[in-house]
Length: 239
Image (cartoon, rainbow, N blue to C red):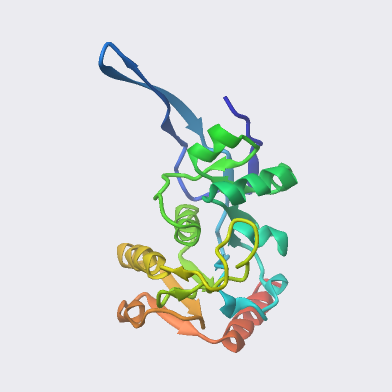
């Protein structure tokens, strides 16, 4: 079928063991037959005493040093070109193929969907309980799935539709700089996640964001200066 390496980062608080997926659909005598395959869990992560840093690719993060971030970092798509997050999420087929061609996933944890795994292959890992959303919202869902309760979101510029606001615009797999991108679709997905998880704290670091995010009690905004202070404080507490 396709193979994946087993990655273990301590133990995990999540009880997820895997899931059944539809590997193929066969029509016989006018009836649909589903060929189902059990996909066991292959990534185990312990979120204890760690924040989850969700890294979008909006230009608001362009001057921030991502290497100053501690674990756990969850990145999206082409981020791997410049930075190695603890977990990379890729739902775009063209970018996922680029990742596989580079062999990045041979030594790093990459999450993708069932379609990419079956059609392109590679040693990536199945997105658990795939929400079928953009890479950023999916990264948030995976972090929550791992047991994180404090998500710090960087590089999310989805407050309005308009010219492509992305660090990787004009590169393979991405729209050109002048392409009008419906970024508010991702905002709607993210808002749904925040609303559905009232016990999870979502902190957005600057960025171009919809004001209605902050009508929810579990959502707040901070500056990059405040983020640096938070990181330094956390580092002092763990040393």
